[in-house]
Image (cartoon, rainbow, N blue to C red):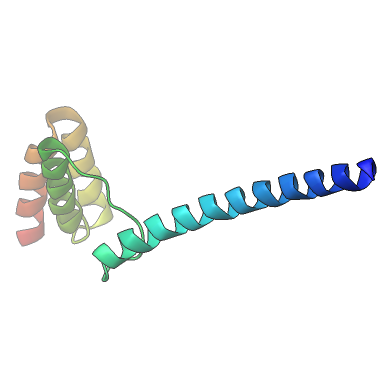
Length: 101
C-alpha cells in the first residue's frame, strides 16, 4: 500500500510541475497577444524607444544614403573621404551638389 501512496504522490507532483509550466507558457503567450493587439498593423516586434539624438542620426543617415544612391562610384568615393574628414553634414551637402550637377 505504501508504494501505491508514494506513486500517487509522485504523480501529483509531476502534474503540479506540468501545470505550472503550462501556466507560465500561457502567461507569456497572453503578454505577446496583448502587445500585438495594441499594435495591430505591426509585425509583432516591439520597436525600442529612440532618443532624440539617435533619431536625428537616423534622419541624417537617410539623407546621406539617398544622395549617395544617385552618385557614380568615383563621386561616392569623394563623398566618403569628405565624410571621414569633415563629418556627415558636410558630406551630405557635397553629395547634394554632385547629384544636382
